[in-house]
Image (cartoon, rainbow, N blue to C red; front, side, top):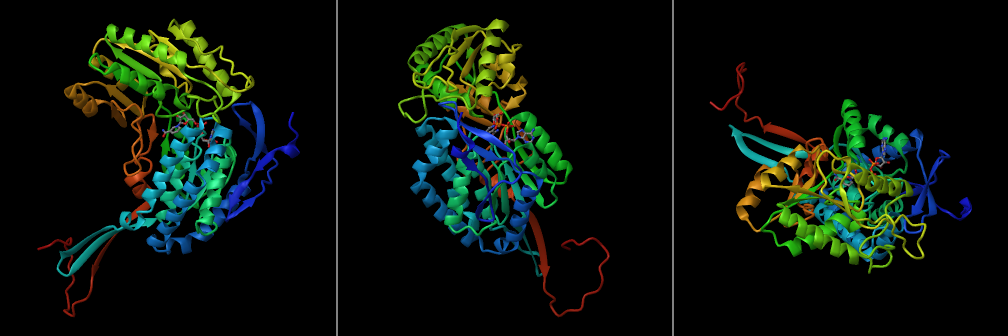
Length: 504
Ligand code: NAD
């Protein structure tokens, strides 16, 4: 066993400094490719979170009054620093999450694009102006920051998801407290250091590591004005209900079970390539992954399963540090057991296990949390492996007789994050995009993750709240509209008017 003294300790980042945890509680951080503990992360207690909030509150007045163009300049420098240090960021990501290095680079690039969008703050915060809404009366709306806001993020995108939140929040004039996932916290700690190097004043961005104890303080402390959350649906629902009942603005993005539909007229070879990446990339641990594919017609279903099986036979699984691998390990031993348990269950439930990844051993990494790609056919909507979010490398093939029947399956599912239709038929595609009850829709695009200047969010139990993450919705989420109506006395004495003001 590794001795505590040899382990790296991951503390908190408060007021521009690394601050050692004092709660005495720690969680182990693992390298999922080796199964070894590589560090321990401090779990903040209530007073440590309160200290972070107090620092964010103290930094707020000056930051709020810093011109948006100046705030944006910090973002420009941060973007450059992230690009210059991308190898280090990706190495941290792979070491604690397990994803393959070039997949980590993709995640980082998507995160950097959110920083690029935040550079547009002066334009994004311009507001709306109307002259002469009445005689000599002008009116405008401006978007003012909220104050101290909080973010709580999941393990599966330790760089990108935090970057959905704090760059936009702070460029809008807020100060921020982020609680990253305790499973892979190092990346966010390093990003906070880079933000300071980019010129962000101390206290504007604070990172507290922790678990439910820390989160509950963020949900109840009256100095926190808004909370952005990304994670699983049960926790998202808890965050939304608790935060809103405490008077906070909350957006809580939850889990998913994204379906792809393959039509008889689809380009099948391209659909199979797209599905391989979407189902097994990042070991299926993406909220936009495709764990269900609905084949329309048995002919398509049979051909699809045959081709997927052939692709799985050559898919390379191994440590994320070797970029020739297609897929790395799962995040933790517990999660490995959970996902493997679902594969066992699928067999019991009567689905046909076409490819069984359970026996996979990666030479030299026998203790790593590796599960080979699994493929089920003849999955039906009553099965738990169909209904639950498994969040692993398990793809379920369901058979349907028509596009409508496939769409009915999607609409009946509790989640509505992403979906994709593979077809060559424009009419079918238009019908699908018009009617499907899902927030992010792809046509021959398996992972329709919106670019940074659109916004990201699902429907149904994949999102609690009204505004989506990043992009234009983030400007609205992290600001409050104020509308000012202004008239300067003209020197004419006016009599009192008791009727409601109108333009007569
Ligand atoms: P999780 O819900 O377990 O944890 C998310 C965050 O909540 C973490 O910071 C964690 O410390 C905290 N948390 C956990 N339990 C808590 C509790 N009882 N009370 C308060 N806080 C708690 O999620 P995860 O396993 O880290 O991430 C995977 C999940 O996130 C999947 O369900 C995935 O679909 C979802 N996800 C969704 C999106 C999206 O945009 N919709 C994006 C990425 C991940």
